[in-house]
Amino acid sequence: MKSRKIHLLFLLMLLSLLSGCKKVESGLADIIWQINFDLVTTTWDVQFIDAATGLPVGANNNDRIEVTITGGDKNNILDLAGVRQTRFYSTKGVLALCLHPDRAVPDPQTPVKFVIHANHEAYLPVNVPVTSYHEGVNPIKVYLINRSNAPENVDLLAQTQVGRMVDGKLTDSLTLKTALNYSTLAIAAGTEFHAASGAQLAGDLTFAFSYWEGSTVNGLKTFPGGQVTRNIVGNPGLIYLACGLYVDIHDADRKYTSQVSQPMVCKAIINKAVYNPLTKAKLVAGETVPLWYMNPATDLWENKGSTIIQTIDNNLVANLSLESTGLYLVGWIDENLCSSFAVLHPNTLAQFQEIPYAFTISIFQTFNNELRFIQSTSISGKATEDYDIHFLPDNSELVVRFEPYTYENSPYYKTPDPVFLAGFCQSGNPVNFSLQPKTGSTFKKIKVVFIDVLHNNTRYIPKVFPGCYRKSGTTVWQSAFVYGGQAYMVNTMEGDLFEMGINFKGGFHQKQVTIGSEEYTLVEITLE
Image 1 (cartoon, rainbow, N blue to C red):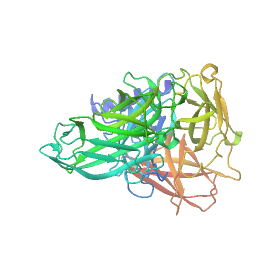
Image 2: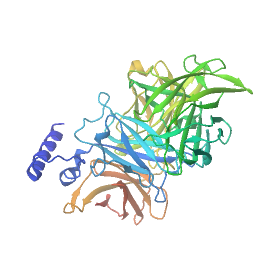
Image 3: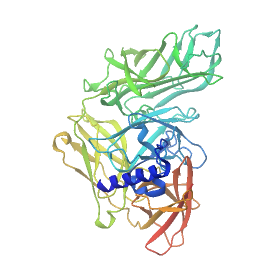
């Protein structure tokens, strides 16, 4: 910590000499890249995944996800150039972010908190709350729902022109249905629609109406409001989803409705496998389930009353009154979470302790001898580093299942066997998971150097950042997390051609390298 303060003091003195009292409001671009990239110790590798195909959005084309950041730490989230952007853009399905060095490093006492808002015209908008407790590379997966290609356990009405406004009012009543009839939305004639600016919508209207099924892994994993969230007073909570709903209305001038003059009436079928976390039993007719609305101005869930579940045509049905467009949650937000955290400890062989790991984990809670999915998250670190899991339900028995973080296979390690968590709130003892390299795998060390052509071709060895690589001629990018300027490729042979790449300033920078016989392969990446 002392070294870090000296660096910052030196930077501030130099800036003062160069530009008087001028402040650098745009980020670190004029300072850090000229002197010391080692100040950046915390980064995020954000993957944007098409929920239906499982592939990164834009992995093999030029599609980009537009990202805005809100939340308490929004001003501390920068791109890899050290610039605080109004809008960030993904490339090849990935967005790289870093933490401003002046902000305290994330730990259990000072976690970094922000919200990712992801937008692309072909997908439903997503807002995912992020809370990070670790230095190094923090991996995040954001699932996007294509408006015309729903994944399993998601039912949607593709955008279509089905209504018309005359003199500021809807001419005819409408009943919208999702493709599989899991939900209907009735809008009365005479309803007025206004954009956030107050302007009235006019002419032909285009609707999007979506439904997420509760008590399914994919229904909750792809829910665009996240799985761990914060309510109106800022308390963390786990979402127990009965169903999710999203309503989107705009006119030909792309004015989007934020207000309706009278409530829209919605009926939604509830999966009979949904468990009520209060009763610890399956939901039945006659029970009351809360209704929540995601306030776009605060990124927090607001309670909008409740619904009494009915039985209609042998289905459990929620009858709802929706007062505005946007994202809704029918279900529960459980704030009775463990005040401590569970610790996962990797076990690996000594010769592989420098090779980082990255996995996505799915966490299941035991209800009456059944496993119920409650959340997924991604973990990473060097093979000597533990990983803490927060926001777990108190007094629970949990099962943690591992899967590769990259969308094909983990490049280095076998997928660990599931582990069992119980009593973690009280004990604080680490739970071991086996971190073993794949049989027959070989590893090639690479050393990464950045060349800053805007500042006299200054060379930097980055301390920590997310990158990717692939064999030339293939389409599959693998994650390559760099620690201390060092990363690894798997199963290379002398003479092989590989490509290294990073997301930088909204563009994708890649470098082709030839694998030699040396101990490591040098990768020089030019940044402009």
